[in-house]
Amino acid sequence: MSLELSVLLFTPTNYDVLRRTMRHLRAQTACAEIEVLVAARVAADVTVPPDEVGGLADVRVVEVGPVKTLAAAQARLIRQARAPVVVLG
Image (cartoon, rainbow, N blue to C red; front, side, top):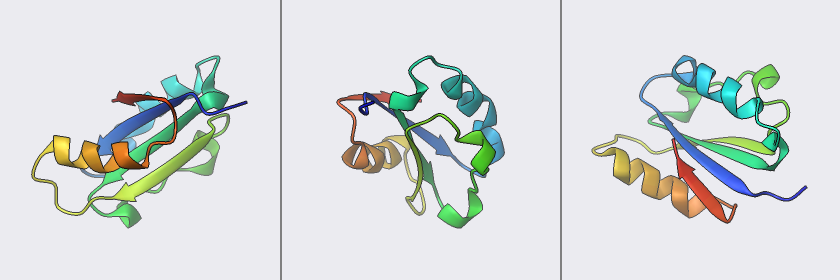
């Protein structure tokens, strides 16, 4: 399958903030066509459990450093998105 959707998420702390959203993304019938990019101040603070990425095309954590605005973090992720459709989550 091809990559059809990039979902961009931000966490101010850790993965727990995203757990419910990730569960809903994995439940989509087209989850194999979805990549998830997670903006984190410090990438090492966001550990995505391997059993919570199953079925998704890709999950990447992108370190964005100190965040002055959510828009700035999202802009960094948009430049890394690979799918033709990008959703800000």
